[in-house]
Image (tube, rainbow, N blue to C red; front, side, top):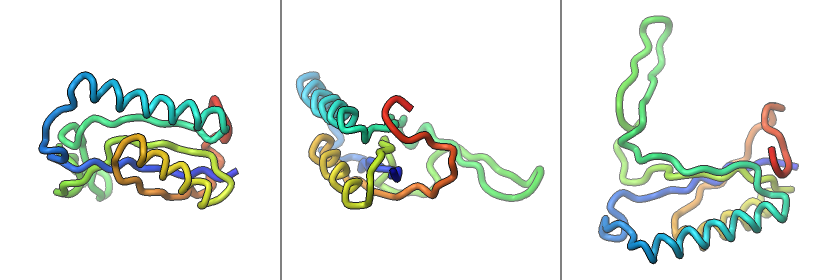
Length: 128
């Protein structure tokens, strides 16, 4: 079984920058929870999470020894940023894309899909 990263992209200021109403947030979370339960039942859900906004990011830039530099903020100035992610177990890219389409439907955000390179460090299957 392969694992794929489904990156959830958010756009700064999208939806006029207005926060969701409590009702909209409840509906959004209902869709996300239903999707995660479906992934879990199918054995596809490995891990998922939401990230704080890009203003909470810290970047560590290259160099050796004392040459490393850390700065606040995202790596690049961009309107889009990763707002969350899922790691899914899928037999192939087509299965991963099917899950990505469902994430799009649940979140109304763009999704980037990338396969993991096998390192032996990620555990496949539910509950890992």
